Length: 284
Image (cartoon, rainbow, N blue to C red; front, top):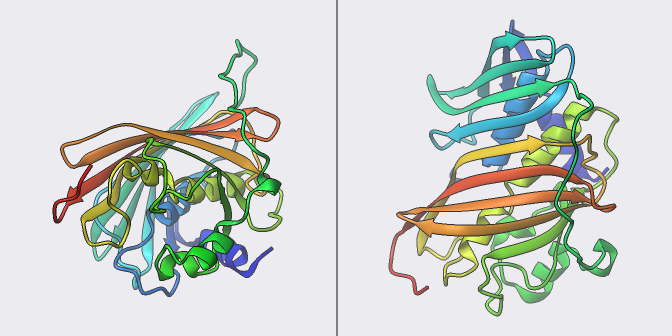
């Protein structure tokens, strides 16, 4: 396990401070706001720790305010329902006495029923693709954030989405996996995938436009984030993240993605809307 992944695992090991109340810490980084994937993953961990049976099958969430990276986050869990097959939890993340994020998560005991799925795209194997960090070091096309050790190994198929010569097609594909071996804890694996799912999805929205993170042309942030977990998964095994953005309009962009295992099983579906507020004109 890399140091970055080990740190993420500790970050997700939130502290119990009262009945159904947990506290999560932030990494010591010079960032304007807390990374949304971290908040979502910690909130899911808080919800999961109140569940006695079943695994997470869906989450629906809204980012309400920017998180303060210098302050711990309080997670309050509401046990909305415990049924025979489904259990539902509501989680509110709080800083400075105000809600910054809320999530509703549902947990289900798998049943035998009808089955079908879409086919996995035909793409190169992850071993044939260079890690993101190597490409960034070689091309010098990203800011300091991309140079830091990261807990998720990302391998983009084709040009990285902020490269000047990238395709303007609002679609991107990359392989992702945790940078090391994780313990056999299904909830932890789901939380790590939740964290990773927010790392690149908005890039599909930005690809068709001459704007990039940190170039001062726009303000970008996740507004809401929804996930459906279809099969058991391991975050430390390669997952193909196939994402596209069907529309951007009115200061918001929509992206959706599918996570496939190497053998073609559809593991997770993701949909996110993001803020794309222009600060100065950008050509399309």
